Length: 257
Ligand SMILES: NC(=O)c1ccc[n+]([C@@H]2O[C@H](COP(=O)([O-])OP(=O)(O)OC[C@H]3O[C@@H](n4cnc5c(N)ncnc54)[C@H](O)[C@@H]3O)[C@@H](O)[C@H]2O)c1
Image (tube, rainbow, N blue to C red; front, side, top):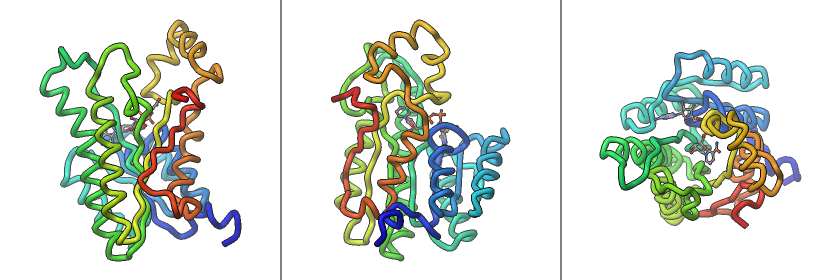
């Protein structure tokens, strides 16, 4: 295959969760530029942001489907997968990007906050993988990319929290699926971004003091842009990564080195 063809997603169908903004939106747009039709979903589907991303995808000459989906709800996931298949006929790529959580020290965290964070980051990823893999198995091919975090690698914050625990579980989930699914032609990998300039990190980039601290700690003196993670996700989703499976691709500018 030609060099550029390796990175092409021409005529593939992708689902990207949590895609109304941030890393999910950047990934969906890049996938469309690489030739994919994209189903974009988010828990917040009525703000106009998801439709705006769908509009950008269509401008690239690809098809887009905007769906409301809370990844912590199995019924929403089943609906997202079914509607994608009804519309596009197949699913080749799944990006489990939806994520977040409620902050707080593990010592103080309520059961409700623990469940919220684990259901979103860990159970949500598991259920999306399971639902989509069942369709990929029938076609004997597919690629799944989970959006993890450097916080899964070691306890980097002063206060421990459920987000890091849930993301650490995601790594084993990625690896378990990566062992189970190759016999069906499906690869499963994850990216682990460092600090990325999205709404999630607004408390940092909108606070000059915290931003200055981050600049000092970062090897590059800056926060990364969502597109810099999207390109790593594209690599893992594409045939260029045909022999990459069960891998955690750290995308942090070397922070954890
Ligand atoms: N920004 C960073 O520095 C950073 C670093 C490491 C990892 N990440 C991970 O990247 C992913 C994307 O985050 P982002 O930085 O773009 O933040 P973001 O807050 O801009 O995007 C997260 C998206 O997920 C959606 N979402 C939240 N709960 C959902 C649910 N239950 N179901 C479906 N969608 C839901 C939100 O509405 C939002 O659109 C997350 O998994 C996050 O943990 C981000």
